[in-house]
Image (cartoon, rainbow, N blue to C red; front, top):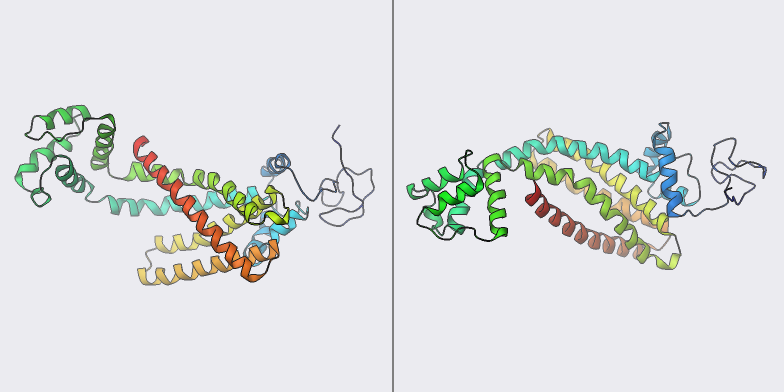
Length: 322
């Protein structure tokens, strides 16, 4: 039987409890005097609450926006029934955010893809075939263009056809042939398969990066003796707010608002986001403003470098597997 360390007062709603109660009769939270939770309990609470739709998400959105750090402090205090679970909140928010990203990215991809065929032929002719760039558009490269853009040819057949020309700087190694294959696919079908693959993997990138962000918080505030899960809850709340904050910006860009207006809005959004982070860190970790600002800037710098490395690796991977 599960061993419970009972308390005489519910940590969530404050109701006086009898020791025979396993759960609070008012709010339903487990009668347990633990304010800290293990990683296993953290995951278990998520799955037990994920499939139950109630008004907690409505009660959680307001403090998430207007009370930075409030939800994290309530979670760390043991008040976990009144508000939505941090992981559940992030998944709901990220679903909406990446849905908007997918919709808005299609037009941008189409615009960027325009002229991809010509860019690839010029680049291939100048860099691989050794033809001077200023003569790429001349009649001498029309044969190359026809071979590369002939959809009836396989990649090997295209290479064999190119080999009949008077150029010997053709892909020879496995890596060169793979790059040629993917680049030719880009010329034939545009960038949509590659960028779509990269966008689909963005949620996975964040799911990989967020535990590392929480680890950075654990290291920066190691003297506070807080559990890793408490930093993870703060990380989830921060990312949920960030994604929600950038949703209107995506919609504004999608609606075709002028670039000058979008630039001003972007600056305002970034400043608001930075202020939110500083206030949230200040309330959760209760340190002075100087230390808080320094640590916010430091953790964001390290996290930005991490995301850049992960995203660059993912883009390269998408190029080879799309």
